[in-house]
Length: 211
Image 1 (cartoon, rainbow, N blue to C red):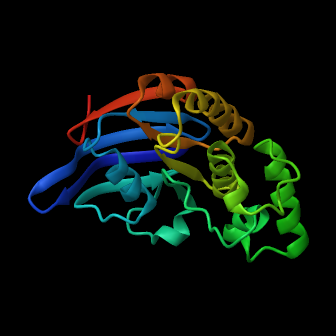
Image 2 (cartoon, rainbow, N blue to C red; image 1 turned 90 degrees about the vertical axis):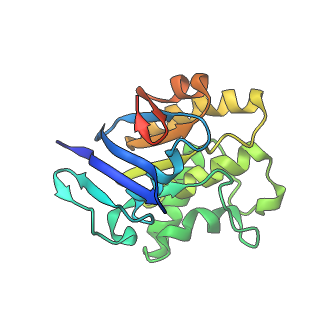
């Protein structure tokens, strides 16, 4: 199939399974939400897909190609964390361009301007990160994640630190932005309403297993 296919994924911490016999597909333009409480294995699964958490067994396939042993930096997957992890000593534009530093300057600057329009922050390129509101910072983090045109975006509860009203607004915005860019994604959350607002499909994860 085109897109992501996880086959019988196992990840362990000591003698405990964090993810157990999990199989999942994500279509080439699909947004899938993984819904579950803290400790259910959501973040561990994202790290395993990204290639930064070793598998005990199982396979990670992309468009039928086996990525299981491929180093994280070669997969073309981007993992966006809960706090966005922006660099406070850099401008908004430099944060967005961080992952595309090897691109020619003109192409890089064009991509940054394009993404500022997409995340509805035109003209913000020269601002410092500490001048941004929480919602603006998360939109910049999203722009930085989209900058290298990832094959797959992995979102680890990126809205959970925001207040409820802002979370609801950004959830709708996030879904629209991902669909407009054609970027497939796995979005993990503990909030059912957030999952429904963003995703094309919602899967429930409990104790490392899909239910």
